[in-house]
Length: 279
Image (tube, rainbow, N blue to C red):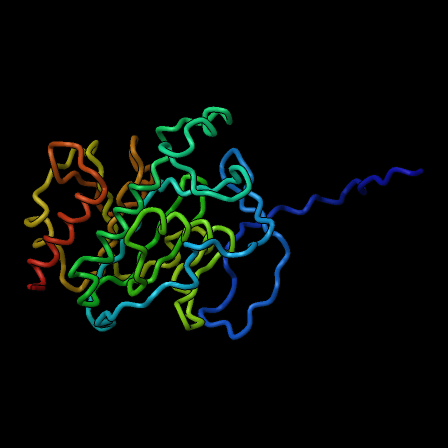
């Protein structure tokens, strides 16, 4: 038997990033081969979707939102969200410190870092805001600890309970997209990095961290910004640490005290609602 060797100048093919390459509307979905989602320090294997569980969502409902493309709006980017799935027992599950502490310790992971509930609360706060319902939220992106970039449409109605949210994320990270209920539009997708390529040219990117030396009153700060600019807010969705992106137009702190991601977002949206007189 002869062992095959690579030619001297032949280079090994680089592994490409996994993301949803389809259009927003797909009439027919073809069966695809099992996928591998790469994350830092681990590879998550998708060996196909088996029979849907009882609480599995067939699609996401669409909520009525008064989309206004002519007015400047806002974009939220949630950084370092702990959204990672793994096969625990017979099923894939969204890893969390509450439910999978023994599994995480066995695999030499720090359970304190696995807090998907933070991203869940932050996403609901953004989508439930009057800023979104008035059509001023243009986009919502979530960057995971594993390096994946998720896009959630502003008019997607996310599950109200954590258990159903976890089931949705498992489907999303396996199928790379989730469609609207009864329609073909993709409301949640895994998209290609980096996130900056999706931001409008006339935008101001603002990072938030308790570690910033620039402490501001959010209401006064918002009043000083040009009304014609789109605003991009980058908020950390992790339990500890700070956002590492340094490509900001401004990097601020809005409280003398550490705040949860959801409460930080509520301060931002309340300031915008007062500025734009959204009742």
